[in-house]
Image (cartoon, rainbow, N blue to C red; front, side, top):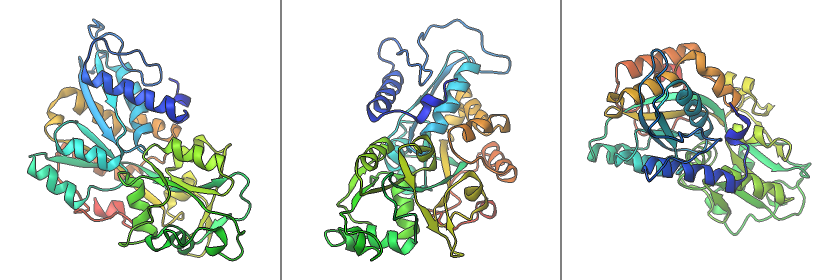
Length: 355
């Protein structure tokens, strides 16, 4: 398995992989050969399924770019163990993924924040029932250009000053955020508004007023990587896995937590909650109708199998503690419908207590 290909790619390669997956999902002609995604190359394969596996069928996934590396890794290993199955993973952002999911176009929706009230309503209007499942923990990471030697530890209030709606057209230089920073133009790069990462960043740091709009926005995290890397005064944010894969190109900003400590996102600080307020659970949503398909049921069981937890850490995220994983398995086995968040944010929520 070539895990180094999962998320370490340039934007064009990343989008080409997603396009190949999308074409495979459409079923037009022969399925493409894609080494990075492991998509099936022969729809008429006669290979026998592995013992205990499923005979074939499609699993359609879309949504968060943050969760994408996990789903891609799981898909590759699942298809290798279940000959004839084909798992396709698209990247429309969390919001874009829910639009497709609630329209009945996909089996599973990846999300880097809980489903919103309006998305709950849309699913209900279309008769889509779903099971909400945490899949891992992430630390939303703030990154700067490698030449930046001043923003080593930032306070949440500084990030708010920089990104809030009132800053648009007004806060344009670093020294307006902190007088100790240089008189240099701000280069802002971040997730687009269809991204769950954008939603979490705004909820955790800014509040109901929302963010400024005059920044380079993209649902493709690789675009943000490239923007900050090329801009001496650049700053951006995305999931921890994308920082880890690009640590040689970017600087990582420590964040002052509630205890007044400067903390960087690491597996340990994300897991123990000391990297706050930017640690978060990330999710998958599977429709109850899709769980009636043997291949979807088997794929979800594969995702929640502790034997496969290493895939999550290998692509840069933090696996769920065993007690939460048990609750997630129980939730899927019982096909418990709905969201534990009721359309509200997950910032500061104890996931085990919620489950």
